[in-house]
Image 1 (cartoon, rainbow, N blue to C red):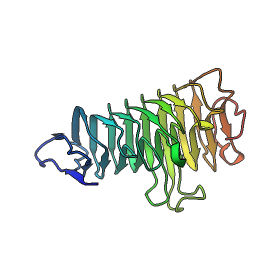
Image 2 (cartoon, helix red, strand yellow):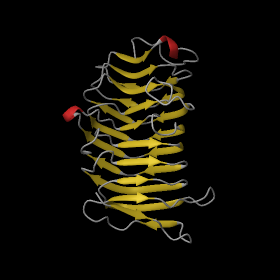
Image 3 (cartoon, rainbow, N blue to C red):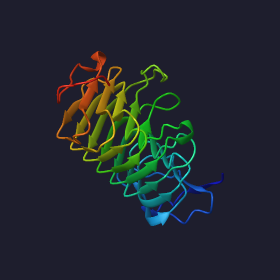
Image 4 (cartoon, helix red, strand yellow):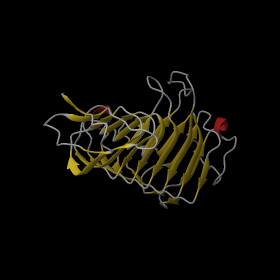
Length: 254
């Protein structure tokens, strides 16, 4: 698959992405600065996928219909993805968004129709630390994960037993999202992720429990979430994750 590289002129603060040719993903490589982040504005334009390999970037307002999975992949620091619609990612593990880096914001996006067919584990969003750096200071706010076969968020740190053991994954804010899980046992799963705040989310019908905290996912704060009555347990936790926990009494395993 060909890749189209977007590198706007340095004098521009806003880069309006041209339409991608058939079969090509947008590959964003030109970042900005702390004072002037580079903004890539889609204006609702359709693209077959987005790869972000840059720092200090805002990606705003794209439409991805049946993109190759993951629909959007972020590798960078100080990256914001917002107002983007991702529908029915195809192939791979079927994920809507994968992200790797620090100070990442994922806000006001709609991701829908991820499918576990052919053995996939199709999450709305996922991060891990096996062949990539851990993610820290992450904000996931105001998104809609609709008709998601697997989890709305799967977050794995570097010391979960499958990671590379380098560094830590910490400080996640998961706030005011709509999460609809159809097949997986939980909607949000944290393994070796410290200091996660989970607040104001709506967990729709489907899973056995809404939140899983495992493998030293300590310091979690859970409050103010709306849990569908069909979900019997809001928080599942293991013994290694209980230190610093604040929220509803855990009622099940993660």
